[in-house]
Length: 287
Image (tube, rainbow, N blue to C red; front, side, top):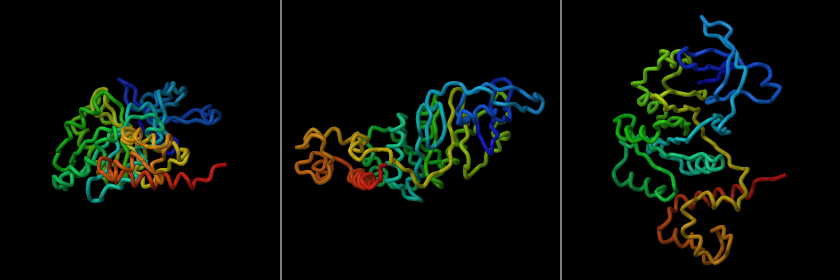
């Protein structure tokens, strides 16, 4: 459920939360337990719920950032306003999750601060990107029910910059949870505001979210610049109109993607971020 300073908190159905250390074998194998792992434990003290993690069970998947395992999807949360969304950072996250073969749901919080026109503009930027988009407000509760349906019976890692209201949303969705073993939040000392460590939080039976620390930067340097266009799904519809096979949609003449941007069929915001990221990847030193 949570790992901090070498201690791991493991939920055992019907028994409760055990505070565990990982056996030395993991250090030799150059691995360590991650939030989301299924494990076997050796109980040292049942009364005080103290144990050792002895076996890491096979992972369905593992993300590098946030460092979690066994997730079904990523829920990336940005504020719609205060602070204004950093679209370059959002696009980086979308690309990173694609690189790790993880489906993404985009969520804009604080939508009570938007006019109808501003909301439409936000939707327009990402409507063809291939990702579901949710507009919610932790303050008014607007959109929360639809978001919960999207998370149902899944384990979703929640990510986004600090200050966008991730914890407020999670607390809202967690309000009515009653774990069979009492309060997990008390045992793992889950704070109400800034999240400093990843932790697995039950929303209802079969539905979990992984709260993770906020990020302000995200690198995609492993990607080759020529591969970047494949991570912008909306480009595919127009790339068949490019004169050159393998067109990078930058300085090439007769480019279908550039034409679509000019005609406002494609989001100029997404396209400008694409150009910035392409330039960044071009300058990555590869050894």
